[in-house]
Image (cartoon, rainbow, N blue to C red):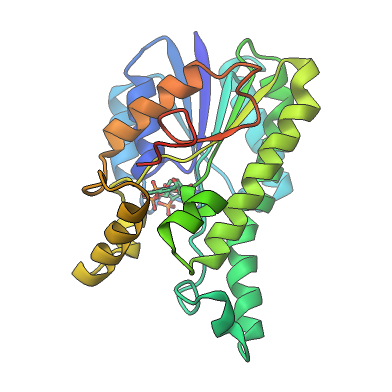
Length: 269
Ligand SMILES: NC(=O)c1ccc[n+]([C@@H]2O[C@H](COP(=O)([O-])OP(=O)(O)OC[C@H]3O[C@@H](n4cnc5c(N)ncnc54)[C@H](OP(=O)(O)O)[C@@H]3O)[C@@H](O)[C@H]2O)c1
């Protein structure tokens, strides 16, 4: 019997976590969503699987998060084995494709670009983790996973030579260091944390960024500078299967690390 909460569970990787985890009736899966507007496939799945519990919340609201912790507690009898923070912001449409020097004279746009991503990828991640931490502490497995991105990694940035996506990159790097801080703080309580890149995965988010043949080719050739074997995106199924294997092996030695879905800092794709 394991309980899991997935933050951002309507689509893409978050939905696939719900799908794969709920296929085992011994798992209790809490799908945390911000709105019903995009929850069609999640509702359909939940109608066929009694172990999926959908909870609407607002991760920017501390009071809603407290209510959410209470709602989860009622379902799981006061504990939560694994929390997966998967929600994210990609930055602003006006500025996400700009490199740092292009912000000369556009300092307000720079601030909006960074603030927008930090709000979800750092601040709300910490609010959510802190609200649910008492439940994690009372569980058997005691794991917290932050879905990050290789794009927030310095060696990956140097290898792929992608100069833009500043808000996304900066905020994911911030998320990585926060997960390492949680790991060292909570080690004595037996709580393990991890920042993990899911790979380049075929989802709405990845399609948004590579929404033309030119944009796709730019992403592909950037990634191929780092790993010539990359041919394109992997499926959500493949990514989540690999990520669940890494989460399964998350122990004190790995706690606080930033790894790929392959469980290391080399195979990012
Ligand atoms: N796809 C990739 O290639 C890739 C690569 C590296 C990292 N990642 C990371 O993987 C994670 C999932 O991305 P994805 O590709 O699956 O994206 P996606 O298909 O766009 O799905 C994002 C999910 O997050 C939810 N979400 C976003 N902001 C939220 C908020 N404030 N509150 C609650 N839910 C929220 C969305 O809900 P709504 O339906 O309500 O919008 C949706 O369910 C992200 O952390 C992303 O940075 C993805």
